[in-house]
Image (cartoon, rainbow, N blue to C red; front, side, top):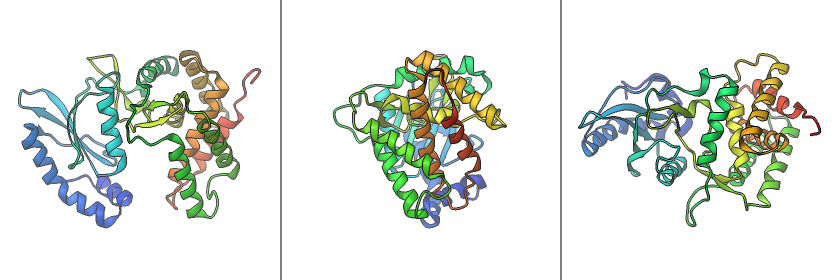
Length: 307
């Protein structure tokens, strides 16, 4: 445990609780060692900037580069494994092996592994849209994936339980988002398996294919909801409200062109998904929601000709 990055230890304890988080961190070295033995790999130091999962490069016995990911046991771990299994490398990183009890997965190493962050929107969005269309597929008849409606109902219920209302989120943002989720829940005919956390950092350059997605959450919902996390990320270039509106308007217009949905539909679904993410963030009583609320306000104010 002492060799683990301090920020990773702190985030684990904050997310999973001190007792359970500390117990898992204490087990982690033995989990890594067991994976090395069972999968005949040599695990190298972890990637920098670990967040909530332990992710490290590794070498197989034949010197093939792979990635070992070990997670605290929680429902999203298992839906990620199920999604990776279902995708079977189609637009998605390949799952080479898994041990559900250990919360461990062995993944292909994607090289060169650059993200979409360096690309302008006119180049990034078409690449992202191409992968998204490949990932959206009917859910299998029997599955354990949650629905987007379940995500939203749970998050907004927790928000109100914690704050006695919508807390740091404007009530009109939450109420509008809930109405959008309800409208889509009333007709699930177009629902698909979604990535659930699709953004610039979860699409990597590779050699097997030019670009490959990683880290699926695995959730069932209308495809337009998969746009939200993309809108939420990589907004540092927009330093004023007007710049934020221009950035998001351009993104939505480009996605509408390449995905075939109208801009108003993508704007509304993206707005609802962004508010959902902010509801999760607001579970932290110390979270500063100023920038989050500015983003949702910008999405509300975007105007389209004839929209």
